[in-house]
Length: 52
Length: 260
Image 1: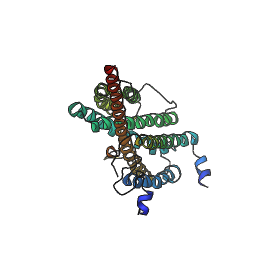
Image 2: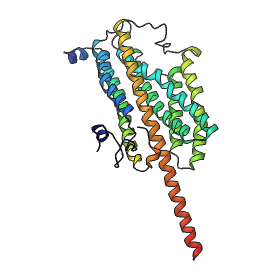
Image 3: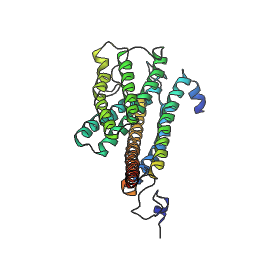
Image 4: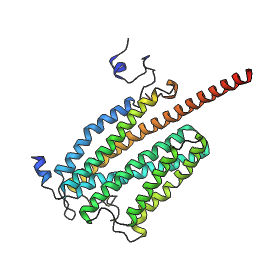
């Protein structure tokens, strides 16, 4: 029902793309940060990464 | 004996409550991340489904729920980068250097997304993705300046020299952001004035949707900023470690050559 409602919007493609690109940009950067942090943590002494 | 919290916690192989984490995550960021994962779909539901279309903009207002929060928040990491750059020039500590670097990265993401969502909104409302309007052009300049800053940060040079040049560029960010913010007042602009503020024109479920979306993006900004800072910090420490190893190897080589 919601999908049909959204599809009825004028310029639905542009609106959904705008939300999608924002979500993808934020999530992609977040994942990249998490992976890079995990990778760098292996090369840094424990005393230099204490943020628990 | 490790507790359930400790085993699920991202700690070093030696375990224990005092062990260093093996990632940039911490309990606080995991809680924050969980809140974001719960509230972001709610914001999307409100923005894409329940919000009423605007009387003037129609359904294009749904893009505002991502565009306005992103653009309004992009100034924070930009200001932070400039402040940290000034502080680094005064104190020369890794903390300020990492803060400047990480803030610029987060600012680039927000400014970039602001440009993209703004272009999409412009296509619906103005009939074009891009026009050489004062607000759009100054924002594009800010984006290019941030890209230049990030390119400098990755330039293979002596760390202190690189940080110094980066800091000088970082100081230029806030004047550019001021230009972006006041461009709609200083020049004749196609872009409207600030959408929100104390005298907001929004009301009803549009205001609720906007408030929820703004809140979610604040949380996202905080989460990204914390992780980006920790990654930048780790990067500086790793680089310093590599440098120490290289110096030690060079000294060992010199000793060996001198002994021959």
